Amino acid sequence: MKRIALITSGLILYVSVMAIAATEEVISKNNEYGGLTKQIVYSEKDPDFKKGMYKIIASYDNEGSKKKMEIYATESHSEEQGWYKKVIYYWGRKKVSEAYSTDSDSEKYGFHRMVSYFDKDNILEKREYYLNKNTTAAKLGVFKRVVHYDNRGKVTHVEDLDQRGNLVLIE
Image (tube, rainbow, N blue to C red; front, side, top):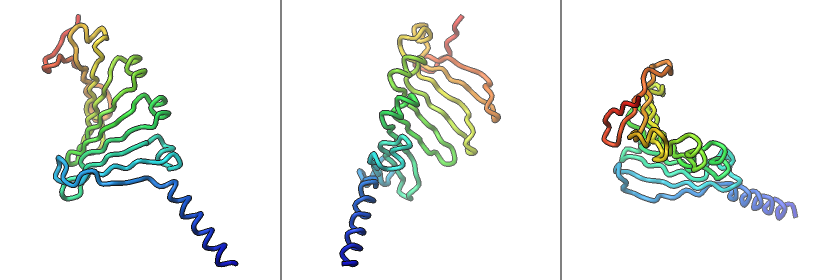
């Protein structure tokens, strides 16, 4: 009887752990970096899902080094944080992070995508804001606003650029 109870408890525990576990699968064995791309989808009971992550797509090079991570937010996290997807590129010791705004945040702040560039010490160097077409600045020819930072995080200068990367002067 004890053995049956022990086996039943073990099965219940195994099924409970499986319900929490994320599903991971290889979706490409030869990606753009010459390595694997894996997709991880979190269940609602998974701790990472509760932190706001619904799905991650991770791309590695042929040596197994992480090159790109796509992070998709849960619906509640998207509404709370204002982004539904982040893409992080790893370039040697530097990192570039793109955040895609939800419609409500995009309307509120006037941009739909923000790209942040970090140095080898993970210090923000610059941030690019891709403006919505209906903003006042966009109507004056600004495609993106680039904010540059010093190594202490203080803004050093701001540039407004058109689609070709030319400086736009707004008076």
